[in-house]
Length: 325
Ligand code: AMP
Ligand code: MG
Image 1 (cartoon, rainbow, N blue to C red):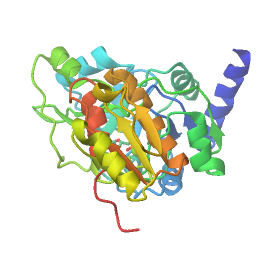
Image 2 (cartoon, helix red, strand yellow):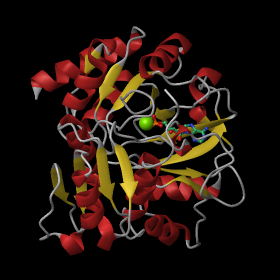
Image 3 (spheres, rainbow, N blue to C red):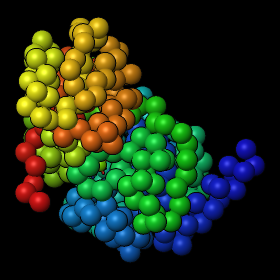
């Protein structure tokens, strides 16, 4: 414990000095910088290879000073913060006075969240300010859910990696825009739509593509190296075997209803029936297919309830059109 405390102190020092710290959250690992230091924030964009117009999430240790980081905090925002923070929910609000435009891609709105992870909360508390952090991966690729993923992908480009073990949720936070009269989900994630609707007592729209610039809405986001093909659950085995027969090295995400099936393919993962468990494993499965040299992944979409909505969203985007080069 003493060892961990000194590590937290060192990591907070790195943030104060303008450095980058990769840290665990309950969703995925983040690549953090002092949100109030434009040069440090610029380094986050360079390290990820992410266009500086794509905003970052500002992570806070608690909601007590939210008014310094966001303005015009609506009743809806307060209800959601009270229900779900700390937790995998990001609120988009009007930008507060402590947030420089560099952290929001020049937008007048800011995304804020209090993560539910002991190491993240210890870091935020030791640092004392806001930490701007996107996922700790190269732009467009699969988010890291272990410290090893971060080290493998970013290596020396990060000044400090805090290892908090594997992430419990496994997919990114749910992002809700609470700037307007009617709240809307910008990106499905770790808090289920049903839970948000129960807390608010109203249905929430999930637009297919949002008018706000949300990097997670880029079609080829969250993509492994292998091409991803989505088919109906009952066609997964046949599609995989066809492609394998044509010479592909096929990775298969086998739907729960076909868990016992024998498949002639390069790598087969029987996906967990429980959506929380599937979400926890999703990025690990995709990374393993890449590591094992698969060039094609055959999968189907889960039912879009609970965390299934976020899983389906990530699989669709992984299967989406790729940027040339
Ligand atoms: P990541 O994409 O996982 O690297 O983390 C940052 C995410 O925060 C982005 O994908 C955006 O979707 C989201 N975000 C940050 N700021 C805003 C904002 N002002 N409006 C909408 N989404 C935002
Ligand atoms: Mg990301």
